[in-house]
Image (cartoon, rainbow, N blue to C red; front, side, top):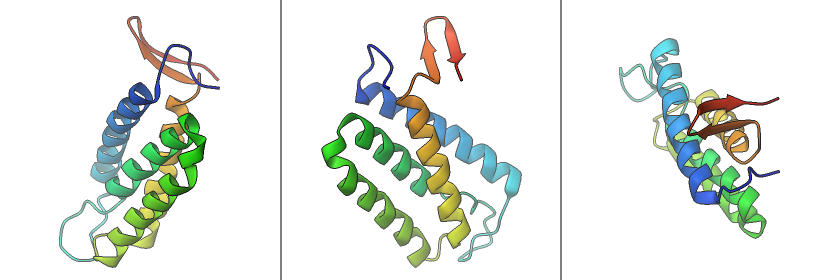
Amino acid sequence: RRPRGEDGDDAGGKGLSCHGLATELLKLTVREKRPNSDSRTSFPSGHTAAAFAMATVIADYHPRFAIPAYLSAVTIAWSREEVGAHYWQDLVAGAALGYFIGKHFTSDHFSVGASGLSWKW
């Protein structure tokens, strides 16, 4: 069930903001070395998390576009491994992170309003 009074744009924007924060916090905490460099920002894949967050929002608000949205997200994830930027576990973690963040912003579980953050189980 989608939150009342919200449209997909709001959910998508909130999902991208939240994914960015969650991804960066995990990257700073885990510090996994990338396969193609000495950078320690491999886990999780931010591109994959963003793609899956948006695919989830699109699928919930526009179900007829669910398959193309998720196929696009999978293609983005695959490309990150193909270019040597991530390991497969980075992609799985990014996909799961993005999916669950997207789901939270298309349901009544988590909302941001004038009174602040609210969380309902």
